Length: 362
Image (cartoon, rainbow, N blue to C red; front, top):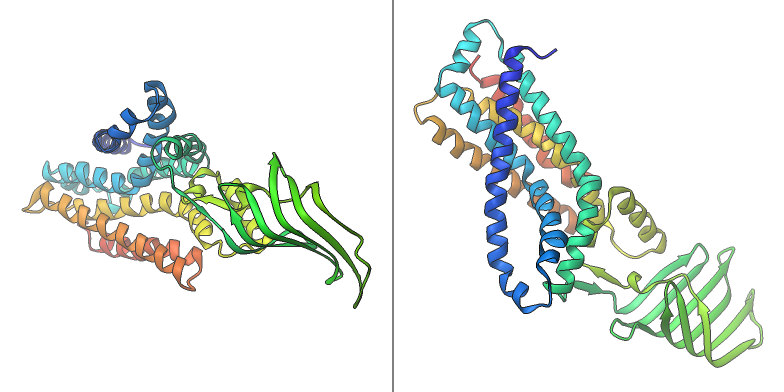
């Protein structure tokens, strides 16, 4: 049960957090508008689309990116104020232990982390679909990345394709080949000079095609060839073109399904997507850890007052962000497992939190 002290601290925590979010979000919106105002005027985009399609979805995105930092600033701000007004000393002199005083901080941080967790895994990715469609249409028009040369891909358990060159503009594959296997032996080979996409979802037209069948080591006669063949193939234009931030457009279940599909098709490294799915859980947990650090730093009354506490907090926040970016980059480009690369900053700062709590004013 929450006591009066718990409710008092929890109210200060949440109100300061919301105020911090509001201030920094307003600043971010002003900066973003000033950065994109020329694109808004140059493109054929309505005011309704800018507000509803873009900013209503952009604001939750930018907030969730910085929630751990907002939490740290909020905790240091109101806790430092309490320490400056001697409220912390009064609470400790009343017989309340430092550990007991941490309870409302933990409750507040868990509430924020719970919302952050839901937003990261489901809410924000759904909004990102609309936001990124807007950006790709009006702002970042060349933000896609295509696989264009020497593409190997499984389109079924026993079906493998090879494409010498993919032309994104024409939506066609040059020097196209499908290999059909049975019991790990090649049983049929379909080759075509070109495979051109006709219509959704997966209708393709093969130009100058030929089909060969095999019986063990013996090749059968040429069973079919021709100029044109309309057929369905289990591949899609989006298999060859990826937006650079496509991972942000998928909810976590969709992202996990995508990772499994990419692995099944043998389409290269999926570590970037694995990092994204682990990051969505690690960031909310970081809010709890940074809450403990902020409380331990700001609970002691010092000569520098709130300014010194905020300076220390901002330095710790910057260090945390730097360490997070460094570990994710290192994990992406090296052999470090994705889960470890994402969680290393949390592990390090959890140790720091326990150390600062042990040295905090009791």
